[in-house]
Structures are given as structure tokens and as C-alpha cells.
Image 1 (spheres, rainbow, N blue to C red):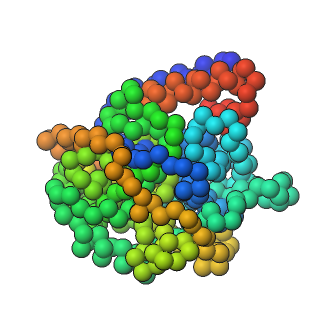
Image 2: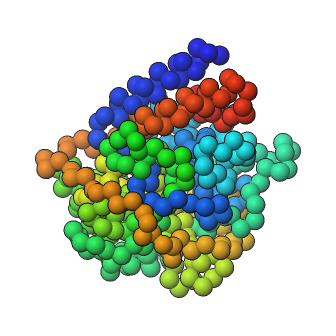
Length: 374
């Protein structure tokens, strides 16, 4: 048993070294504000915040495909997956974790290009334990194709390059709050922040210029790009928040019970945390509605609409940190999107080591044991 955990720590240390390359990182929140209980009820932690996820029905979570895959691209054992709803602080020893019956990565997910980076997770069925279902008013409605058109038009109308632009997207997650893997950048508290959507043609142009290529646009057809509303600030997603929700508010439904909040994207990948030039990439969920409904064997329109009491787009972000954006290299990179060797900051590594200590001293952290085998 001890040897297993020593092996796990060695893997994390190697991952830390691999992450020194800026080519790609898995995201977490920079310049976000702390989240209170029930403010973002749809947010879940996958394997104790190894990744994030979004509740879309009483027994279903949507996340990124790479969150349920091993480093070699094979599907991880379902017994090693746990879902933690309403988890605000990773230090909470009373958090609840649910067992999983099955995981469903998209059949055309590409582990090298990270295209079709989407997966469904189904909680254990009633024959195992009837309590394994999410509470009412926790599921987030998925963006429809019609709403996608409205959102795309909003992005086009509100986007300005190298200037402050409107905040029209919400991202959330645990962990690093500083770019470039700075040692003091770990925070166990769930945070959320507002971002700006980048029109798809602008995103393709920016990324193609940066990577000195013209083929990245093909990767972005199934993606949404987002960046900091203020190009001088590092407001962004960063290390460890993959699989989490990207949320948009339909202006025509702000007064509805669910405040018009829609799941539009899944945090997927990026190249620099908090860069002022390169948008991060999120899986576009609207084009996968058919696959989702087929996998769930259920119409998404039949899911009851939740009632939310908190509107994150009306929240006060004036107290958020103002970490400055990093400048990307002037010389374009020539490497196309590929997975990095790891996504664990040193602060997070120390936190995990603490969890292993608590496990040996008798505290109940079953989530940590399973995460160690990912």
C-alpha cells in the first residue's frame, strides 16, 4: 500500500517537470472570486477536483473526455471515478462522494488533438443505492442550436481586440489562482470569474498566427474560445480545472427561474494561463446534443428546469484579484495542440500529500485513494 502511494507521488513530481513546457495546460481559475454554498449548484468535482463537471440531470454529469482517460489514452476503470457535488472547499472532511455506474467518452475523441473532448458520467443506479442522485434545482440547461446562433452574434458584436470588452461567459473551478505555475498559486476554494467570448473566426486567426499554421481552425469547429475581458489582466482558466462548465446567460430569459443560464462549453485546453493574446479552448456542447440524448436515452428538453437564486452575471467582482496578464513569446510556436505531461501545481501536490497523511491517520478520504490511481 505504501509503495503504491510513493509511486503516485513520483508520478506527480514527473508531471510537475513536464508542465514546464508552455505548449498546453489544463485550466483553473485566475482572478476569480470565492464561491459560496449553492451559488453554483451544477458544479461538481470529478475525483476530488482532479477535474470539474456539470450536473445536467439527476444522475448525469457532463465533463471532458480527457478527464476520464489515462495518460496512454485508455479509459480509466469506472471504480476509480467519484463525483462530489456541492463541494466548495477541498479541505471539507464532510464532503459527499457518489459512486459511478459508467463513463461515456465521445466515440470520436482524439487524445492527441483533443477534438471531441466531451464525456458523460452516469451515477450508480437504484439497484446499488437509491440515494445516488443529485438534488432538485442543480441541473444546468444545455445551450440549444438556436441559442448558439444568438450567442455567436453577441460574441461578434461585443468583441474588440486589445481593448476591454464585455463579460459574457462564466467559468468556475478549484486550484491555481496565479499563472505560470507560481508556487503560491494553489487555493482549495471553488472560485468563479467572468470571461469574454471570442468569435470563432477571430480565435482561428489568432491561434493560427501564433502557431504559424493554417490548420488549427479545423480543431476549433467543435470548440468555443474565451479570454480575459481586460487584456491587461490574467483573468482566465488554468491548471486543473478541465471538465468544468463554461456558462452563458441568454438575455431573453434572464427573468426565468433558471435566470437564462446555459451550459455552452466544457473547459478543455489552453497554451498559457493568463496570456493576453491566446484564448483558451472549450468544447462546444450544442453540437453534441444528439449524442448526449442518444447516450442518456432521454430528451434534454424533458429535463425539469432548475430554479436558481444566485445570478453570477450580476455578482460583485470588484474585490477579485487583479493579477496582470503574461506576455506570450514574440516568436510563434510551431507545435500543434498536444496533451501536456501533467497538470499538477506544486501547491496542489503538497495538498495531495497532506490528504495521503490523513488517510493513514484514519480520516475518511476515499476520493484521494482513487484519484491516486488515475
